[in-house]
Image (tube, rainbow, N blue to C red; front, side, top):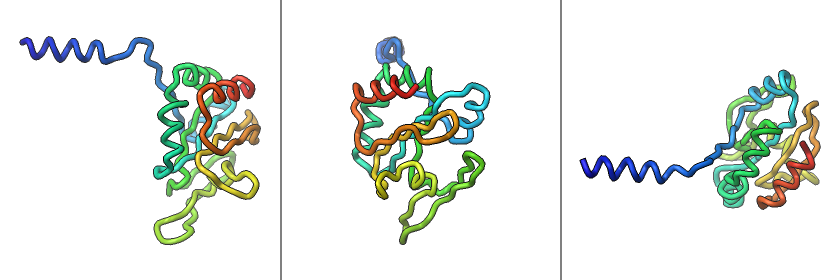
Length: 154
């Protein structure tokens, strides 16, 4: 019985009050929701091997102010640039393009993350309500800078 009470207490105190979770959508979901309730779409383009992407995932996208801003004023899409599934977005189907043995990049990642003829991870791209690119930035974006960008682009 003592073990059950101890486990219950640990669970109770381990859950932070006011915990907010970032809502992430697929491109198709964000596009459909944007037709009903127009909002910009924030796309975080990353890969599974990128250490700087992980830094952003574990800092900027865990901040409760950033989460609140994204959940309220945007549709957020976390996009792995090496996903192999075809994605239809903005009346166009994009697919994975191999660049070698077990390597490649998704066409949509190329469209959204190319700045000065280069794709670098991580990239944050904000699409306007008409699906045009209104903001792009390579590199880790710290929490305070992320908040400033989001508040300017909403």
